[in-house]
Length: 258
Ligand SMILES: [Zn+2]
Image (cartoon, rainbow, N blue to C red; front, side):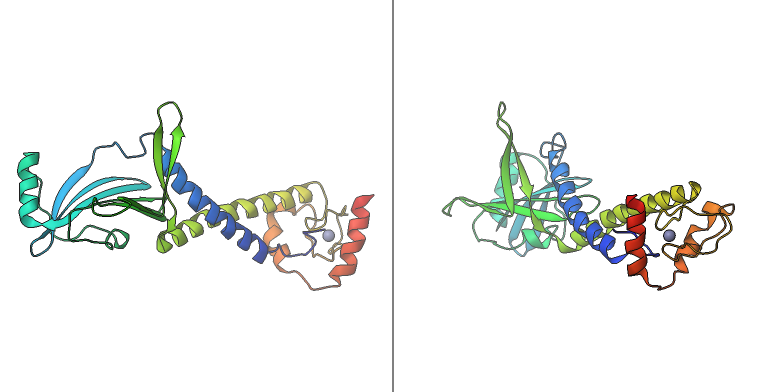
């Protein structure tokens, strides 16, 4: 049986929690895309960026916690951009610098094109995907790391789910969710051991204890008197000794089976 050692196992829970952390990180990105409105129709900011001399791009951004949608039109020759501004008959603020993350920068062509990039994940953005549209390409739309899924058969509503890792954000999310799960796990272990002690049993192997003994006769774990009880679990479990655990373990499992 497990849990017979004096010291709670560390490596296995950590590995399991990290693996579950990856699952949680990806799940968080799915939830962030699925949240009603998905950010896709939320108010967006439109800006114009002079990426280089004579090259201009329009960037439209929807950004909220756990979700970023960025649509980049261009880069295109500046005179085309100026004409577009006139057609749109609105002032689009010119902002210096290039706001695109690295995963929205490649595949630039000289002709106008639109790139639609999505990043999702909470608390950190951890996955990305993009769709490149270009009338001069065949096919016109190229999806990279972006899966479009119909989420409502009646309205034919679709959502774009990104899945290529943003490694830094993914690592952050895995550590975040893994730590939460690990804390939860050790809280449960601690409560379990404490309840055994309150019931007058060895916190390690649940063998019934007398008040005056110093060591569990089954697993050899040093014990405080029951009266001092639950307050001292940490110190008693940390002063574990490497005794003949294997034989004692088999004995105690027999004992528990009775
Ligand atoms: Zn014991």
